[in-house]
Amino acid sequence: MQSDRRSDKDLWRLISQESDRSAFEQLYRRTLHALMAAIYKWSDDATEAEDILQEVFLDLWEKRGRIKIQNEVFSYLYSMARYKIFDRLRAKQLSEKQVQAWMMVMQEEAVLTAAFREEELESQEALVTSELEQLPAQMKRVYLLSARDGKSIREISEELLVSPYTVKNHLQKIRKRLRSAAMKLSVIFL
Image 1 (cartoon, one colour):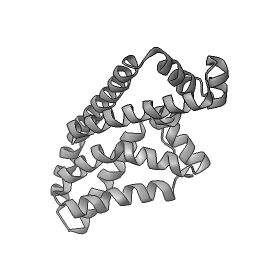
Image 2 (image 1 turned 90 degrees about the vertical axis):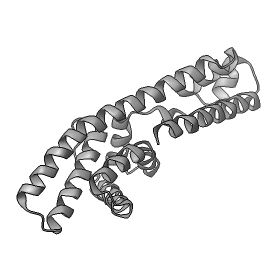
Image 3 (image 1 turned 180 degrees about the vertical axis):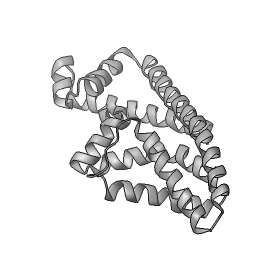
C-alpha cells in the first residue's frame, strides 16, 4: 500500500538505482494516460502514438542507469515523447520550417499537459483523502500505521490489540475502496 503513495521521484530513484520493475510499472501506469493523450494529439494516429509511447518507456528502462532527471519525472517523459515525434517528423522529410512550427505547438502543449497532470494528481490526492476520511476509526488507524508508518500486519495487530486477520481484512477492504474510487476517477480523466 505504501508504494502506491510514492512520488514519481521516489519511483524514479528505485528504477534508476535498483532496477525495480514494480516501480517502473507503477510509473508507467501513473503517466500512461496523460502521455498517450499528448502523443495522440501530436501524431493523430493511434497506432503511431502507441508506438511512440512504447519507445519512450523502452528507452527509459534501457537507459535507466545513465539518465539523470533533475526536475519532474513526467516533464522528462513528456520531453522524450516530443523528441520521438520530432524524429518521426524529420523522417517524413518535413521542411525545417514545418518542424519548427510543430516544436512551437508542442511546447505550448507541454505547458497545458503539465497543468492537466498536476490537476490529475491533485484529484487523486483529494480522492484518497476523501476515502480515508470516510473510513471507520479502526480502519483509518490500520491504514495510517501501514501506509504512513510502514508497519507490518503483525506489528499493527500487536499495537492495536487485534488479530492479524482483522488487520489483513481491514487492509483488503481499504485497497478495494481505493481501487473502486480510482476507477471512478480514471473515467473522469479519459
